[in-house]
Length: 124
Image 1 (cartoon, one colour):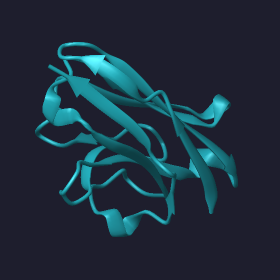
Image 2: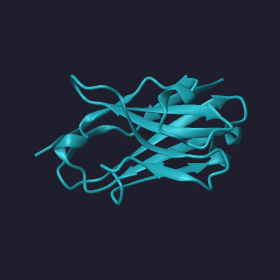
Image 3: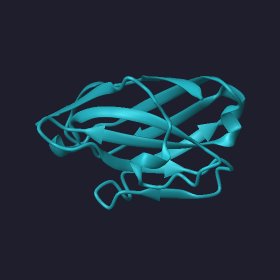
């Protein structure tokens, strides 16, 4: 497994941008697909974006397509989530997760390592 630490969350106004980072330590980061998930108050945790272990496949929830972008830098053992045109409904705790040799799929059960989360609050 890998250990994951998210950062970059905070308070932003509607229409603003944030970039979340997920730093990994432990086993070979490049062998892991990375996913971003979020959980809003009173709601289930949901898939946001995923990127395959090779970086060639990405997937997004419909609610964030065209606004969010997932990427990875294997040299820095870090995955990113660039979030633009933020909306109040994007307010949530954002978690990154890792899946060995995965495709970055939406299924949470595919991921075996999770970070502690970082809070994103979008004010109107």
